[in-house]
Length: 162
Image (cartoon, rainbow, N blue to C red; front, side):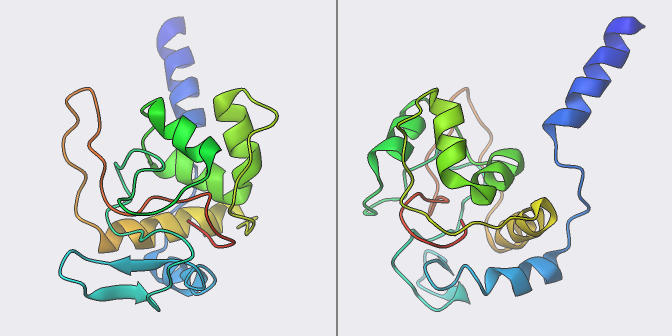
């Protein structure tokens, strides 16, 4: 019984405790579209204004960090992606609140840097933007131990949300 309660407590800490609001996420995404777009494989812009400062965020859920094709990421986020870390809600919410702090913590490197200067300070805003991006993206592929790179990752490349 004690182990079960501990496991439940730990599980509750791992997931953001915010009810996601896709509409609120769409409004907050207006701050992100300065640098990011959500554009599907057919080239249809689903959100944003076709900005290219940051990577395309279509297919972000389940994508390995720092792997959007043909986007030039900074060294730190590429190094983190090399560890196999995948974008999920918890990582995204933590990242967009303070990209440099996230990279430093995940890499264990106080010199890690992020090109993304913009921060969504409120965790509920970040969770809502995640929900919005996820609502525009295909469902992540089932993982066979290693996640396949999807399209457009939250990036360290621009002063915008990811």
